[in-house]
Image (cartoon, rainbow, N blue to C red; front, side, top):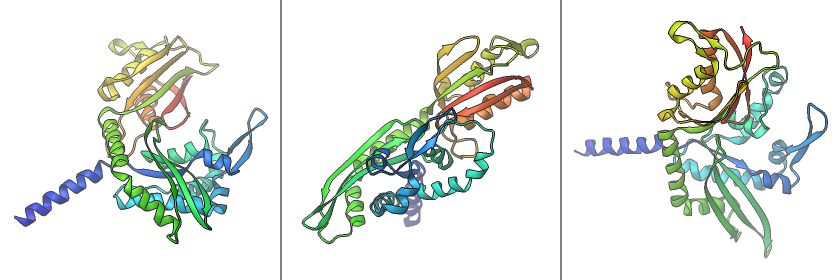
Length: 313
């Protein structure tokens, strides 16, 4: 009897763990901006843009490293799958030469590229400040849980003025997170269960290159399979979204924009699935294989992809 009870307990524990989203703790842009961890990058068309400098943050800010480690540790103890942001940053930097010679177009920020690479379900966006009280450090922090694919806010946790009192800052932060975990965690689980059941919302733009020899009303296929390119794409999206959920916000001869496209969060092998990968497997491959149409794609964040129809292959 006790073995049966143990088996049931292990099964329930495993089921709960399988239902937990993967987590990555990330320094908030507002923290980097107000503390000067930014750099200027040149834009392709001239001019420059201020972007976060994560490398400088991790090299110089011991408080930030302590915060991220303490918060991650609290969620790791609660059996959440974790992805390390700094490790993903180093991995991205090691690929910089490969990326610089690639002809793949991307409109992603460094943060988006890290999220796309890591494929964490939820990011914990951390902002904080440290001040001195009677010679000891005091810290206040805010954690915003955000769906990393859609930027949807899920939950927020704020702790103000944790006194030092000789206790290590990492311990104070971790204890504060654990104390506030029940309600915060329930919101994470509820959100994750919803997207598992109803899919994650994405945007897919279909457009034409400037020199495409036809438009989206061109007929392709043969016999009963013959139809307009735009209608072929609509049918592919309809058949492969969860509960056939999507909506069209723009539809012309040269452009169709599908919004709220409900994409499964896992593929057939149980691996994390983003909108770009889904669109490539469902739309791009089909158009190339069945209709001999050349399609390129651009990433615009984790849940937004643009498919550009070039013409015949």
